[in-house]
Length: 474
Image (cartoon, rainbow, N blue to C red; front, side, top):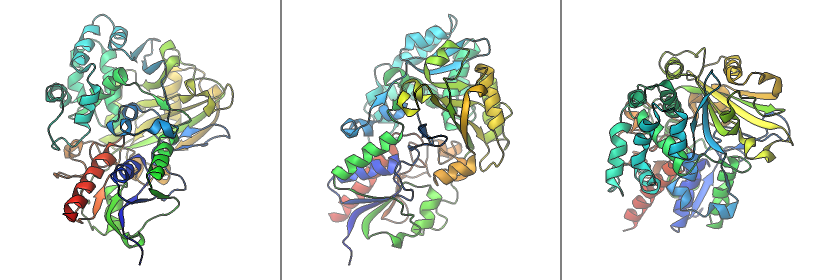
C-alpha cells in the first residue's frame, strides 16, 4: 500500500509551485505532477525561433512578481532568481514621435503627460505612494479573509478603482493620460467600460513607482526554477512529463490541489459540471521575434523601456478590446503589449542580436492570422522593424493552448474578466479555492486574485488547504 501524502499538486506553474512551497514550509509532505517536461506554466523560457534566442513563452515582465507578498517571503534569490530593471518600465508612443511614460517616479511620469495633466496624475497616485507592502497584501488576499492591514488606503483605492478605467481617466484633459491608463487596464483583456478596470490601471501604475516592472535574468523560467529548487530543499518531490487524466492515477493524499483550469480540474476530479458556468475570455495572438538589432522605435523613450504599449489613443484601444472580447472579431488595428528583454538581459540572444515579442487580442478560439496586423502596428511606431526580423514564432489561440492547457481557447488570463468573475473567481464562495469534494482545491489564476506571475492564488489556496487539514486532525 503506497504511503499517504499530505498534499498532491497537479500543475507546476507559479501558483502550483507556490502552493506546494507554502504547504511544505508548514511541514507537510508534498508531491507535484506536471504534464510538460519542464516546470513553469506561464513562466517558461524556450528557444522558440533560432538557437541562442531565449524567448518567454508567455509572461515576461513581472511587476506583480517582484511585488508579490508570497514571493517576498521566500528566499528565491538564494536559488538564482535575480530581477533586472529597465531604465523605464513602460513607454506608450504616439504618432507624432512623443510618448507617455510610466517611470519609476510619480513626478517623472506626470511630467510626460504635459502641464495640463501632470497635477491630475500626481493627485491620482499620491494617496498610495509608499504603501505598496500593506496595500498589496490587502488587495491580493481574498477580500473577506480577515481585516485589511490598512483599511483607509484600501478604501481610497476602492473608491476610484471599482469604476471602469474609462470613467477614471476623465480626470485628464488630454488623451495621453487616458491612453496610458487604458493600456494598463487592458492587461486583463476587458473593455475599458468594465467595472474594476480602474483598479487594474492604478495597481499597475503604482507597482511601477513602488517596485518596478522587472524581468527575471535569463527569462521567466528563472522564477519557476527558483521555486522548484526551494521546494525540493523543503523535501517536496517534483515529477515532470506526467499528464494526469483521473484522480485515481495520483498517489493517495489528504488533499489534491489543482493549478489547472476549473473545467480541467472538474474533469480530472470527477466533479461533473461543477464549473460549467465558468466563462473564458478573449484570446491572445502572440509573435516572438529574433531580431538582428533593437526595435527602431521613433520615440526615444520606447528605446529605453522594457515594455512598450502600442495603441495611439484611448479610443483605438477601446475599439480593439471591444472587437475581440464583445464583438467576436479580430481588430483591424490591435492594441499591442510588447516586451524587449534584451535591453536589460543581452545574454538572452547572440551578441548584438535581440529578442522581442508582441501580442494582440482576438476572440477566444479564433483560427485566423494576426501577424500582418501586428507588424503593421509596430511599423507605425518603428519604421523598418520588418527589415530587422531574422525569424518569428507565431502563436495563435490554438498554439497558446497547446503550450499551456490552462489557456483555454487562447485565454491566458484563465477566465474572462467580466460580470461577477471580476471579483468572484472562479465562483461566488466564501472559500473560492475549495470544491464540493472536501479534498480537492483549485489554486490556478482562475481563482482570486487572478492572472499574473505572483503566486498569490497558490498562496491563498495553500492557506485554505492548511486550515482544512488542520481542522480534520483535531
